[in-house]
Image (tube, rainbow, N blue to C red; front, top):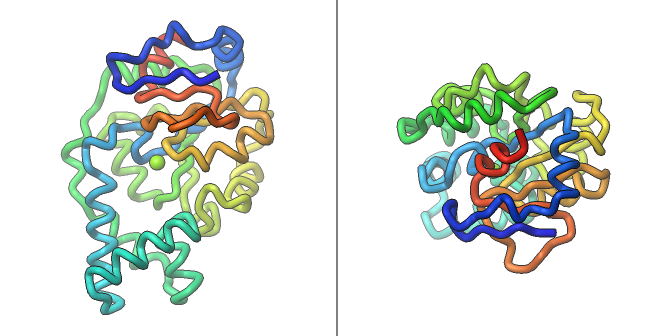
Length: 233
Ligand SMILES: [Mg+2]
């Protein structure tokens, strides 16, 4: 049930199974991840955040560059984000870290009128669910011209600093937003963030990466959400 697209041009949304398209058309609650989902990774936003994270680890925690890289990837793997690892293992307070690593240049992001229109046409509630802080989400959405499109942002503070794919993050999200999983869809660029949504019966769209092998918790894989959204409504 996976529609693969190795490039924006190569993707053929018409080949998406009709059962999934019908299900997506019945969606009344839309959840979108932010970074590398609502804009393309080529804009390098996460590269900047990674560089700022390295800088934070060396300037605030006195790590050498090689150690900073090692710590960053091991925390990412073990805890979902570098921040979660720093809080668990180093007792770090989140605010200074979040402020520092998200102090980046977003000028590469610009409004895409087609994406704005396609997202606006989606019926029902629309929420951004991000592992980043609300201030970063707000800046990104503003650069993309999407701030009026989404009803709200559920950020890392709202998740108790427990990032997706942690179960507690999804539980907090569900407490904050009452919805029927069968009528909900989630778009995210991380396969692991779709495991729990699939378990509870949501429609799961993987954005960006093409999975190396079909994963049952991915209903549709697209390079960019736009062609799929345009085909839906
Ligand atoms: Mg993302």
